[in-house]
Length: 122
Image 1: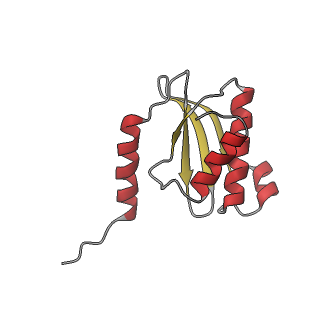
Image 2: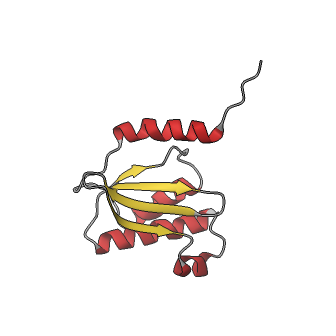
Image 3: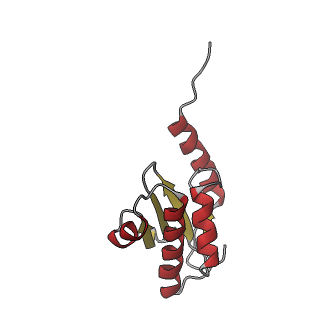
C-alpha cells in the first residue's frame, strides 16, 4: 500500500535535525527563516538566553508597501536586506543560518544572499 508523505511532518523532522547542529550564541546568533505561501519571516535569535534580537517580515507595513505581494523572491530579498540592516544597527555582524527545514533554494536562498550582500557574515 502507498504511504502518503505528510509534508508538514517532513518539514518538522528536517528542522529538528538541523537544529541539533545549528545553535545561536551571543557571539553568533541564529538567523532563522520561516516561509509561508504568502509571506516570509526572518528572526535573529540568541538561543543561550532565548531572546529574539531582530525580527523582520513581509507583513510589516514598510516592507509590504515596498514589495506588494510577500510570497516572491523580491520580497525575500527585501526582508534579507532589512534583517541585515537591523542586525548591523544592533552590532550583530556574524550569524549562523537556519533555513528552517526548507531547501536552500528560491525565497530562502534569496533572503540569505541579500543578507550577505548587505553585510551579514554567515
